[in-house]
Image (cartoon, rainbow, N blue to C red):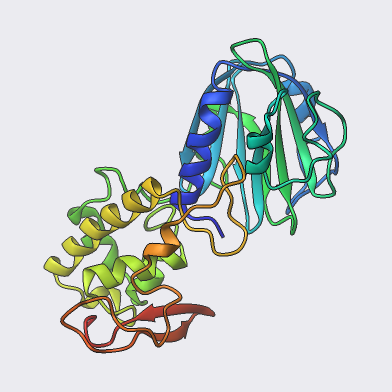
Length: 300
């Protein structure tokens, strides 16, 4: 499932095309994704202007000038694709859909999993399509009043953004002293910190030299400080590299992220630890049904 770096990459990809653009139409090719889609979404978005594109945790927020905000969660296989009205051959090769939709005019030829299509005109007066494609339909969308977006049921219980000043020693120390679960579980809890999932929790803990098996309330202040520092380092580095592409993640032009080429522990079971002073192999265990990768020599 896309985590913070992947969702931020998508936001950065759609922002230049969307901000200042006007929605001309919204086509719902089905009535639901993971949950029902708002049936009045086409009516409420038609002819509205995009003011802002942002992210909260793993959610994309598209704020309109008519005081509505579209919330999008990509789920496991959700993709957002921007199709231009005129595509060169090089551009076509960058998208992951076949040539049926890559004609030089925008057509109504949608592929099987193109569930929602947003037709818009950009600031240069060019018509484009933004397509939400989702093979397994675990993604979700909702349209809410902008003033109430942060109190929406998907967002209201989220913890602070890990790249913000709110994710501090004082905050995390207080939260972890109340936790009787493992630090890996705590980092993946969206109520503790927003946007971190299985991949980046493993990477952060290796960088921090903390075992994923450690109970949260046993961590010393120096270890919590390292976790905060490495959280910011790992996530910022992943964003710069476009996120991680293991199976389904693609950016808005169809390209893959390449942070997976720089994994320290994730998906490296039985490979050598990247700490030059360590001769151990990376281990894989199952925690709460998810794989954890770590070095039992470097992480305590």
